[in-house]
Image 1 (cartoon, rainbow, N blue to C red):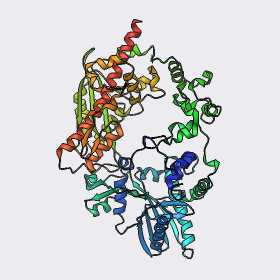
Image 2: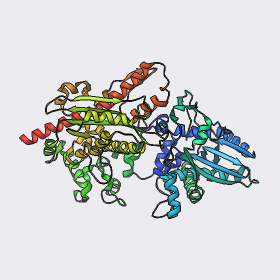
Image 3: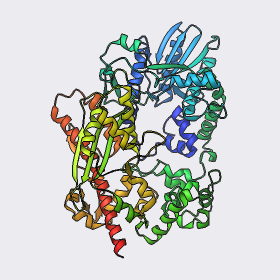
Image 4: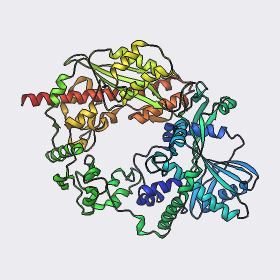
Length: 637
């Protein structure tokens, strides 16, 4: 191993998903689709939440650490131990280490013989629901409602904290054996049951990237968060809730530490047990070769089976064949039969998924597109004008204005391509707000003005319906008075379990009525569009599609890969997926881009946002145009 052998919290989580991945991780194998930690954490608000938590403990002392060597680990651990000998101390990110187990606590508070370990999480916590479960069902948000055991979406967080507590217990026993200290674990998280009283709270925090890199596993690694607001207001606001999780943690310490020891032994001994058998779970393996590093973890595990064309891992819902407990795919893999054509067709007997699976197998073998016999009638019934819409939204841990709760929906951009009549060119309309601290109502009003009450509204998936539903209820929550908008929202979106959405979901139509071999088992817009675009040259000749055509050395690019890049500052930037749009928006709102003096830079970022959202709706137009062409051919055949 290139570094000292230790097991961090993230290592343990990796090992539990696949122990072979732990091996690749420790050897520094390349990964694909790995989001930069800055953008990942910026997306969920963890930087600002962590900064608020630190502000609540102004006396806190930060423990600096570089964890590249045994010596640096030992020094950081010794500094932590030295501080723990003080009567009262607050430590930020102290280093906990015992027998190859390594962790950094977010906040450690020592008062006499009492130690609090406080885990900061940006994940929303509902204190009202938590208290109701305790009061009425003798449960909590951290427990499975059926079994009563620690489980569900919070379990991995509780395991993280249990790991820290277990290490600290061993560390104290080794280094301070004569001192009897009790450890109390807590969770500190934004409370969905509370509203902030601070208007424009996010504007008081600015995130800056630092050029220095430290191998420290710090939540602020390479980042500085500056606070310019009133500290007393932060104390009074109590947007974060501190929750005692002692009972839950105590249940998981022993199994968590035992599991850690197992994986540590595997690493030290290079045990064959470290290498898990290949299975259907390998489909999402991120350990693939990169341009800079040819090592490919997936290929090392699968050998020649990785190169089989029309792979069974590409089959729609392949893991459900044969049942969840004994999936047929795992049996096939052990028999080295990994082509989707090796699947016994009689095993495809779950009608919920089997129809699509059979279509995929048949038309992949034929290498042909497929449309159902019903699609022509569906296309014919769509009323003009046809509106293709796409939204860009953000859910931030930090509320945008006073009176809002954490993680409320904020809609900041929409694009619409409208085809007013058969054979007419699409007309594009768009809206973007980077100034209004809470733009939802203006967003919906401008959309209503664009769409009106005539024609058909097409989306891709159900996100747009969810956004319009949220805005409808936000109008009531914030007493926003616009009867026309309220009626329009109620008539357009499905608001609850009953009723019907008047939005037509093209993703659902694809799943039921369209297949292309290049899509494989997927139906996302970014899979369907390239499949249609690359194999139907007539689309490239349509004037309003031509700007998205590029061919290099015989390869036709996906329109998403030809979006113009802009030189902004010292970097080439492009926004070509939804997460990037959300991150660009957040950066413009309260990141490094917020206080730029150069309006041209903000204007360039706006253009990146515009061109991405614009393509999402044009992509739907391209697919719709092709469906119409296929239906016309079917009718005339």
